[in-house]
Image (cartoon, rainbow, N blue to C red; front, side, top):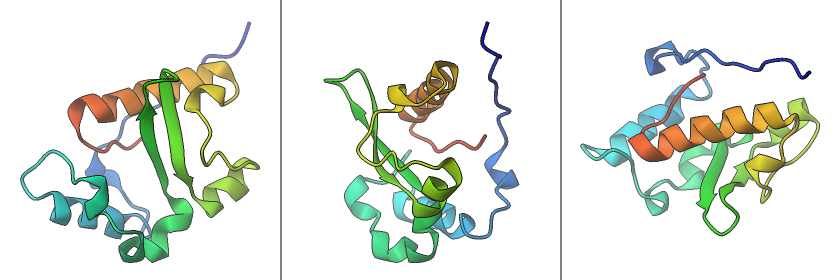
Length: 116
């Protein structure tokens, strides 16, 4: 039987990573009073210092999953694999993929970032 995989939700006030804080601040500045900014409003050149530690994903309705548009190089190095253009459902173990899908679904349904 596979081990249970869980995550603890943190408040975004707990975002301590100095390389990610500017991205969150940019997100808030660009979105204004809307739930989220449009993709076109978030320009990579404004996040240069953080790109290696960012994952950007989109919903792939045709595949019934989420697809990574960007899987940062630092994350790739720590994970030992680059998931850019790959589906979240293909992550291993499957329990981890299911957990990540639930988190991403939450982001889509609320229109807000989350921190785990």
